[in-house]
Amino acid sequence: PFMARITRVDGNRVTLASGATAGLRPGDELNLYRSQRYFDSLDGTPELSDTGVTLTLDNVHPDFSIGRIPTEGGLINVQRDDLAIIW
Image (cartoon, rainbow, N blue to C red; front, top):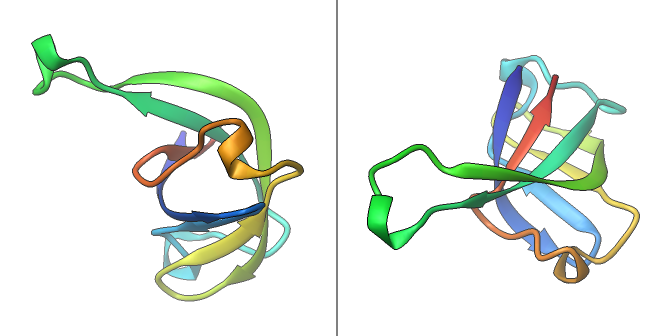
């Protein structure tokens, strides 16, 4: 799978830390996952929770991308350092 880190969420707009140099193109769809770490295992691999929401990319730049989700990011608690994944 391809994974990109979320760097910003503003309403229904989501910015990713990957862009055209990573192979992303406008119209690509990525699934959003919440990344969770627990205090008793901070060095461990984060646990991912599927939000059930798909991000569609609108603007793809060399090093970052911007897309839209069908709901407000705050309603599904998507935030910086969560992941967008193409399986």
